[in-house]
Length: 177
Image (cartoon, rainbow, N blue to C red):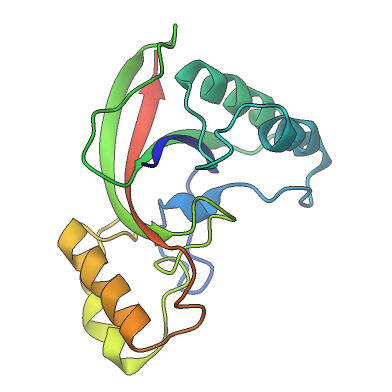
């Protein structure tokens, strides 16, 4: 079961449409262009912050620490809670409390690997046009059933990398106290 926190770039836009996108593909690139983020990403990838099976951070306090490290670069980051089933938000006995949580929508992504989203990288095929209308103001599916149907059709129609280990991810914006 996938459940935990990710640190993502705040106020991101879909790279194809320019519209808002609040999904998991906002995770900063490992050894990307910004050197000030390199040490923080080393801690994330190699420092034991993330669960090796799911790629998410189980502890809210560790997520807050990583978010602060990444923010030193000058870019804005935020914390999202990701889960692949309906389970309560758990901060893994964290000493940091959650002040607020906002449901952002459902993404379809490979969180367990590189956080590639087929919602952010929406297919241009004609069959997918009706699904585009089902995206909310955050660029995510508002309903889990719509995300599941899109993934089912994406695989059935053998779109690019349809055999990747995609999950329907419930994305929740979290503000710690």
